[in-house]
Image 1 (cartoon, rainbow, N blue to C red):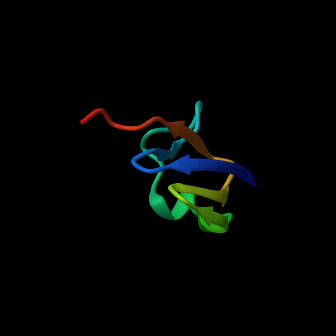
Image 2: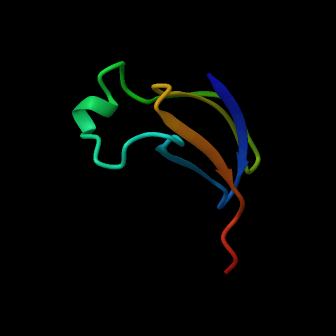
Image 3: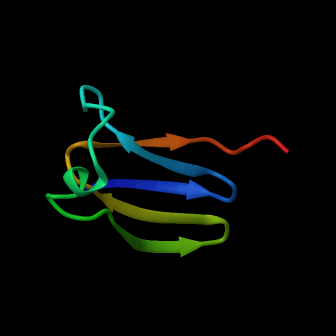
Length: 67
């Protein structure tokens, strides 16, 4: 499980990991289980969450989008 903190307007990206065949089906991608997101705490404009996903997926932090 990856634990991340995100602020207002920040994101996480979940996509196929490196070396994964781009033609893989969703059924194949999720055969080992779903993506699970658990919120651990929230205060002011910050949320701490855990992301658990099949090992074929890659999880990345993304900063705030400029307005």
